[in-house]
Image 1 (cartoon, rainbow, N blue to C red):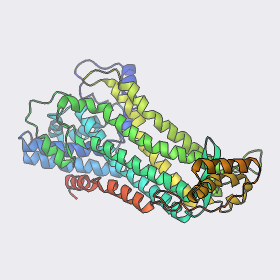
Image 2 (cartoon, rainbow, N blue to C red):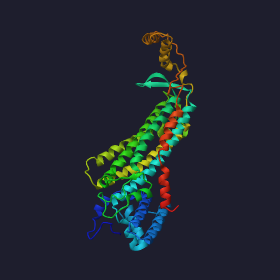
Image 3 (cartoon, rainbow, N blue to C red):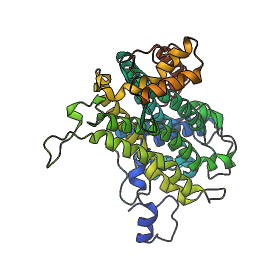
Image 4 (tube, rainbow, N blue to C red):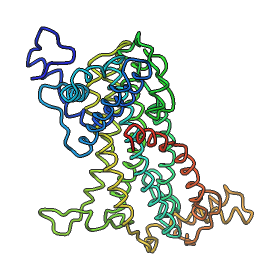
Length: 446
């Protein structure tokens, strides 16, 4: 069994090792490719300040690129007895290259190494989330345009209130995603800063060139203060999780609407049969299980920022092992939100709406405000018009005119979908994904 990077003469108790390592080996597989990328930038910087020769840099770079290719091909694993991905990569380099492999850790700690891995991983995953969101945004807008002339009841207090439309309903969730994207951009900006060079949280006596590693890894800037760079562990994850929780809140609300509107008592929409399940006892049932599970999964994601807060809330400055546990919930959340967005996009794209919904007289009274407004527009004081229509309803004399003429921005007749698309696009274009992709390609010699 290989020794630990920090181990000297005393061997660690087996039970203690099992307890402290926990699920780290499993979780670190998420970070493996980013650990190699961080190391490629770090050794290039070490050569620039004289801690590696040009020949050693070339040898290490080739070996790290080889390990990266193995990770991409699914041929990399963290061996039993190896604590984490950082130790595995250094072990492989030492096995393959000898003593030169041991030089890779100069000027850094596993503290800033895992920090940079997490930042690189999170930045890349946020890009994937944004792309999934954008697909759903476009689908919602397309459905909004498709059904913009089909009216539906709007509710307050779960009581039939005023006319709405399916165009408004789909479009509302598109605009909600536009706002969620703004928050994700802020989380991306917090993530897109380089902690490498903070070492264990107090810097290094080596003359590290942190601006160089920042450029090589495609970060927007350095996390300057080395103590604060370490304080970012947990904080960054909480900020990102809160941004994802906003997306989850939007989707959870959409899922609840869909479950409600799909039931027979509403019958506003029909979900595709292939996305519903049956009952073991009731042959007529078509259950909206996909949206029900979506609602629950989104609600679980909304709890994650609070879990991270509870782990980090009473920690003083500096590194503590408590932070390791955040990875177990944080790293898989990206798979979860992407799966949710993908499934919801498939569902929404195939939803069919009831275009004859308002033939049912139970919705007649939702046009009462339209009649009040019509009378007020003809000169009757609003309060008098309100009273007249109210008395007509009580006396059973109210006859609805099932037409609406809403023209102001964002209303039934003026959805402003083009402006919402412009808002979304301007935020989307503010993400500079190309910069880090170009930096990664250069590190990998592509």
